[in-house]
Length: 278
Ligand code: C2E
Ligand code: CA
Ligand code: CA
Ligand code: CA
Image (tube, rainbow, N blue to C red):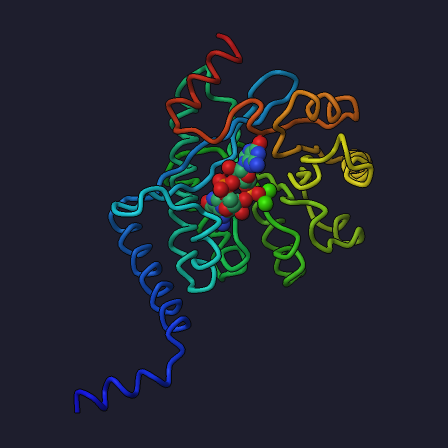
């Protein structure tokens, strides 16, 4: 019987088997991690004319055995398995709690906080109620909260998207279109959606000085956004020359390693006090 058991394993591709159990292990680890408080938010400053106007909240997972695990690794799996629903709700609650703490300090009160929302999270029934509950239970103000959506998400179910964005806009919540230019947004939809901001994807910023196509795209996104009455922010700004190019072409704001990587909240607050003065 023992041998027979071993023989049946031959029917499995060992590599595939290993991949499946690694995914299952990662999913279980994420569930445990969420229950045990292993997730936290880091904050990357967003700069407008030399001042920090807010931050993008980026999820970090400190795994007790593997150390820091990148969101690029666990977000796609969380999206697939549905764990993004409790995880995304935790992010919203943590972000709103942080906004409410900032509101109690004069020098931090005006900060905005951008939160990434994944498609499955946004399109679930009750998403609007979830955001409103996070605002209400923390005491955070709607206008300080900015949700970052991706093009794919917006196009998945346009009527649902417009309805939900409209409801949240009624509470002052802002919307930014992340990774702009990498997907398939039609300009007709852009006009119908109550967006506040376009975000130039870092893949265009990277070679903006050396690749004329990327430079043209960056300039076009700024012109398009501006003519639609939207703010435009660039992400992934790493050099002074990139920042200078974007500024020269009237991009409104930027974020990137040139100013700061995403950092823990205490470090972010210190940067705000140093940069914005008192
Ligand atoms: P994203 O929303 O496009 O975030 C920007 C990514 O670029 C972040 O990676 C950030 O740390 C990184 N970055 C910032 N400045 C620079 C720079 O100057 N140069 C370069 N090369 N990279 C820079 P991170 O933190 O690893 O996050 C990766 C992705 O994971 C995010 O991409 C977002 O799609 C997702 N993510 C992170 N946190 C959350 C979350 O709370 N919810 C959801 N749904 N997704 C999240
Ligand atoms: Ca983002
Ligand atoms: Ca992005
Ligand atoms: Ca991206």
